[in-house]
Length: 454
Image (cartoon, rainbow, N blue to C red):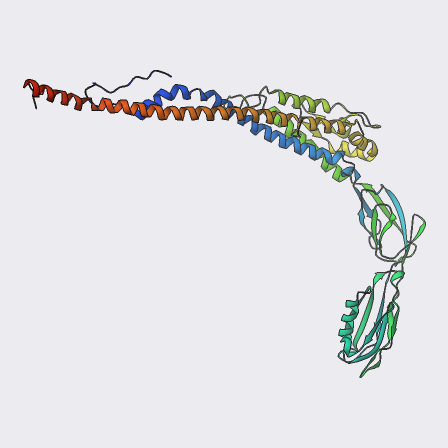
């Protein structure tokens, strides 16, 4: 404990001293013990901020690379087109589709079977008899509450027999319409009627549209489809038949690799990589105030930089593609990357499978870089950033414990010093009154007054 001088004037003045200030002065030297600990905490906190930002950027880079290296990523995406969108439109081309051209000729479209009843002048006319649809018989009587067109329609729909019933009304009267719930020939309706209306007589049904399958050829192979949405003629491709008005007309369906999305994904990868390199470069010097950046000289930063740089030049070749420059990626003097979209498109158009392999094959550039990112990122338990953050956390816990213990010791010491110094101060402040008492006793004993003003 340091030496502190007390200033309270003459001992007989009764002035005493400032206890709180004196305690603060006495403890100042011991509180200084915490200064290097606090400085360490500040430095570690600054490092944590940078590690957190760097870890986030590494995670973004990992995600952007996965879009290129995953088998179900952008390299598996397909897009398609139709040479005559009036006859055929392409609905979807999934990842299982294979790039290529197909010829489709449409002979006829699929139709959904429908029947309609003869007209009834009064839609509220009471019905009687029965109606059999697809083998299901509806006996029309008051007990079943289906004696009008509307109530009979509701009863048919409620039976859920795979048809849709509705009442159609126009200037000639009202009709009961029955539409099959299954398109194509398999949904052909079978209807038998003995219905009659109280004021309209017998009610008959006639075919509105016959159920039939679509008929077409795909690459010369004859195909039928119960629906005009065809999804099993070309693997991974779904298209819609729109018209058969031009029999014999060949429609070209073109399936291509989605190079647009690949270009976007590659651009995202380059941007994400550059963000990480910028994070690293920023730490290699002093800030605007001339102070060293938090991770200047940090070994974890050097490890990340080396791992990423080495990964750019590693990975086995895939056919005609053996390095990233063939993908239009060049390395700048500061370690960042630049993408030339034209070079990338040329490589995709001429060597698509080789580009895919360069990113996805075992031991390829893409897989090697993926491994490197796993080694240097925030992944537990071995990621470099993860380990650095854990080490900092351990140090911070220890420092905070030391500071807490020191503060507890100082608080206890402060209480003790305050009590002791308050006692001493009270004694000093009581000296004048004690001297007065002694003078009074002396005067009473000797008759001599020590206080000439008394």
